Length: 373
Figure 1 (spheres, rainbow, N blue to C red):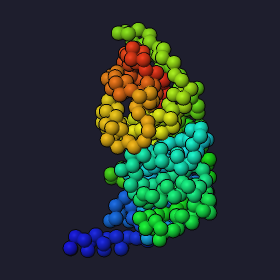
Figure 2 (cartoon, helix red, strand yellow):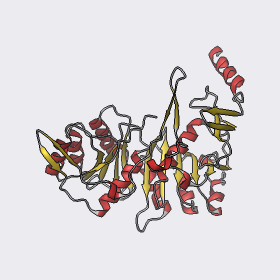
Figure 3 (tube, rainbow, N blue to C red):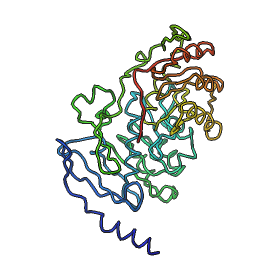
Figure 4 (cartoon, rainbow, N blue to C red):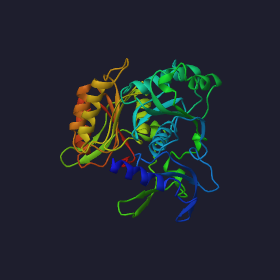
C-alpha cells in the first residue's frame, strides 16, 4: 500500500509540470496537452508539437473521447499505424498494438473498406483486441459497425461519414466499445515517405539514452517509390560466382512485395512480413536472428490467422539481408513464392542460387529498414 501511495503521489506532483515550450537545437515545440500517462501509468507525459507548424498528428481532432485522454502509448501506436497507411494510394488499414502492426491490408479489386479492415484485423485477431486502427480514407458506416463488433482503443482516419460517427457514439448498442476514442488526423500526405522528403532535416528524430544523452537521426524512410525499385537480386562471391534471380514474379506478386516492404518499415527488427492478396498473413517481429523471425511469422500464421488465404503462393519481405539461405528454405517450405530483402550479405550469391533452385522470386531492395523503437 505504501508503494502504491508513493507512486500516486509521484504522478500527482508531476502531471502538468512540463514547460509550455521547449527548444531542441533550432527547433521549438509548444505543449499541446498533458497526457493520461506515458508508457506506463506511473510515468507522467506531455505532447509537444512544432511551434507555428502543422502536422498529421499535431492537427488531430478528437471527435469522441474515452473515459480518459490519450496516453503516450496511444500516440505511438497512432503514429505507427499512420506511418503504414501513408504509403498507399489505394484504401488501406493498419491495426497497431504495442508499437507493432498486428495486421495491415490494402484494397484489391472488388473489395470494400470493411473488407480491408477485416483483412487487417484477422491477420491476428487476438492481438487486435484493444488495438489502434488507422485508415487513409474516409470511414464508412459498414466499416464502423464492424469495428464496433470487437474491442479497440482508438480509430484514426482523415474523415468519417456521419452514419459512422453515429455508430461510434452508440454506447447503448456497443457497450464493449463505449469508451472508444475517435480521432480525425490532419493531412496524411504531409507525412514523409521517401528519403528525399527529409532533405531539410525537419523530420529528424530524437532518441534519449539512459543517461539523458541525445541521438538526433534522420527518420526511417525509403528509396522505394514503386515496384520498379525492387530489381531482381544479384550478387557474386568466390564460392558461387555471379548469380542473378531468374524466377520471374507475377504482377500480383510484385504488388504484394511492395505492400509488404512498406508495412515492414513499421515493424520492429528483426522483422518479416508475409502478404497475400493485399493482406498480411503474419508479422514476425523482435527476433534476434533472421531465420527466427521467419519461423515466428510462419508459426503465428498457423496459430492466429483467421481468413481464407493460405501461405501457398504468398510473398515475404525482410527488413535485413539474409546471412545464410536457411531463411529462404524455411519460407519456401511453407509455400512462400516471392521474397524482397536488401542485399549486403557475404553470402548473397549463395542465397540467390538457392532461391533459384527452390523456384522462389528474390528481389533486392535498395536499403535496410531496421526499426529499433
